[in-house]
Length: 122
Image (tube, rainbow, N blue to C red; front, side, top):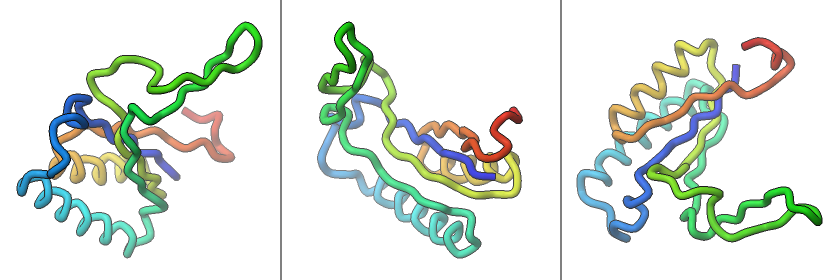
């Protein structure tokens, strides 16, 4: 079953610095080694970091049709910073994977099932 992993980071972290700390670089290097493990065993489908929320666009319904506005749809304390898609045997395996990532990166990750042929099952 496929799961979408949504990685969040504190909004103020986007503004903090353009240079990552040695600790952050070490954590990311450890994450990359784990990502290589997931690729090797066929569980990682794709992963991407996202651009700064300030350059996003939100499209909402309007009285005269859809309206695009600059920026995210709300002021948030945490912003969506990355996503990954994994294809694993169970939700328990997805939780195991995400637990390892959270332990390394220290930021929350939401796990959402990707709807497939069995999308009516919860």
